[in-house]
Length: 197
Length: 197
DNA sequence: TCTTTTATGTAGCGTTCACTACATTTTCAT
DNA sequence: ATGAAAATGTAGTGAACGCTACATAAAAGA
Image (tube, rainbow over all chains, first blue to last red):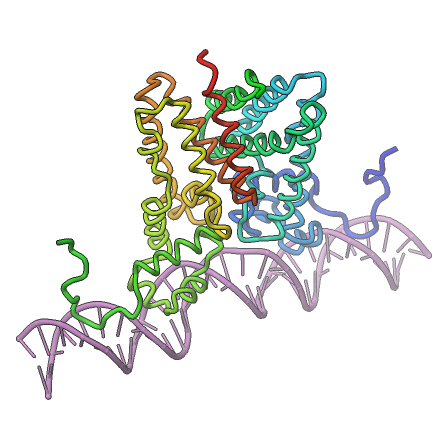
């Protein structure tokens, strides 16, 4: 089972590992952002030449798309789990912000959220659009999870949650350590630990 | 009094108004961000040619610096006033977030905060540094204003305030209208309306 | 072996970028 | 009038960008 490269494809075999390359690209994009990573940077880091790059990935933006997907699977926040329905909203969001604080500072040279930072308009509209799509999907997941508990306030709370995550991502990129980021997250979840109005 | 252009400088007079040009540049940078505004965009918008541009402003990054300063003076949040010591922390921060909601959506084509968005690492390290300097100054003003009331928690609260402002700026750029932004600000200030622990 | 298929390395494409050399024009000071 | 000073328009610089033409190398199928 699993249709991973069992049959040999036919022609000259690829001299580098594609998945590994996507991982390296993900790290570069996360460190410096899409615009600040040039094709020369990428081919240099992968040890390949431009034709091999384009044969394997199509374009810089396409590779970015694969890096985003890989990030979402391997390092992105698991919203479904963190916002599981057995927790109260207060507990769930406190857990979410705590997880964000840890995740956004996990790699000292690649801080913040790749998706959130990528969704900010840069020079390339295609690349930015890919990140925005993922960001919207995340928002939808968050919104739906909240709606199970607070149906009418779901949109408003989702706005707040996305804003807090964006603020924490910004702060992480600004150099705040995990403890200061955690404090921001705890402060942000105070909005739910008391009131009801 | 005031040493505004009274004495005529000597040579050929400038064919355009420099301050007005800084204003146009400020608007362009605010709309698209530093990297996405090319010199061709700038000279086109100002109706001048590159030599006039460089004679007047020195470099793209220098003009950006002047645009940032102009923004801080004309459209930036007046932290000193908003965080005036006669208000409680809860009142002051609620007022700050309310003002941010309005300011960040005041121009439909140039949303968010120019300083915060500019401080995110782009391609140009010099331009980014100028924005970061202003951002740090703002943080210091906020921190000092808070310290007058909550001396030991000033840093932690300042982290939170800057993160909220960054999140609101992100949300504004994402297209949220003033009401949704206001709701985020109100939710964010709930952290201060109750607790004391 | 011989063809087909795919990936590779070399070299360079066209475009856009921020920025300038240079001659000219317009002003003030003498 | 004449020279100095400053800004202008024309035209183009070198560098970096994402990307590609093309011949060659390495594998599988016939």
